[in-house]
Length: 207
Image 1 (cartoon, rainbow, N blue to C red):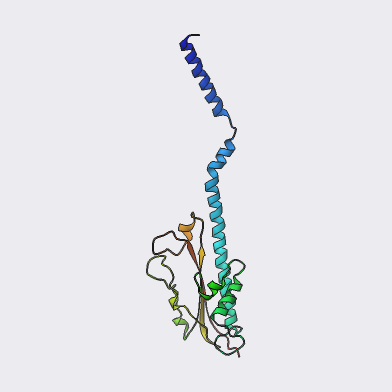
Image 2: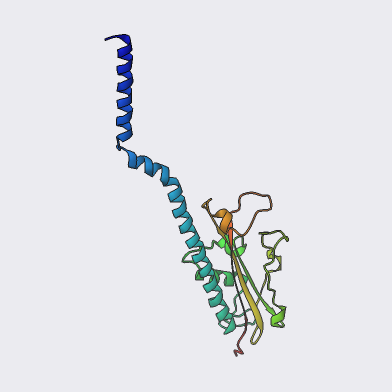
């Protein structure tokens, strides 16, 4: 066999090997799964995290409704020298019990809020009740400003507002830009979805 024929035969062998490899399906499923696994699981985690965040929002809303009902009916009072009186810390602890199925409050959180903020106050008229979220600045997605929050519910027939704010931390990077509603002032990655629940009511004329 001449040198030219040997080269030609080697080329044919290489071609046959490449053609055989291109037809082989061994390991194809594993390679395809490896390529698609990352975006697939990112989407799955994003769906789960979005669902849990909105479930937490509903939980906070239910807690606000339940606690405001107890204020409205006189089952919880403040500074009235009654067995039903609760101070700020006791009220926050009772609220945390309402949401404990999904959100746990430490004793440090109950004493000094960093994630859960409660605002319970009375007003002379319904028109005096604030209807905006207090924010640290006018910037879009600015952080909340809790300096005006207080705990001073009124007595019988008083007009009250109860608001709850909770910083729900988002961990999946894929959904952070879309559902986080608080942006850090230093420009760092946003992490918090601000849960807000509010209700206004007039207390019953309980004895």
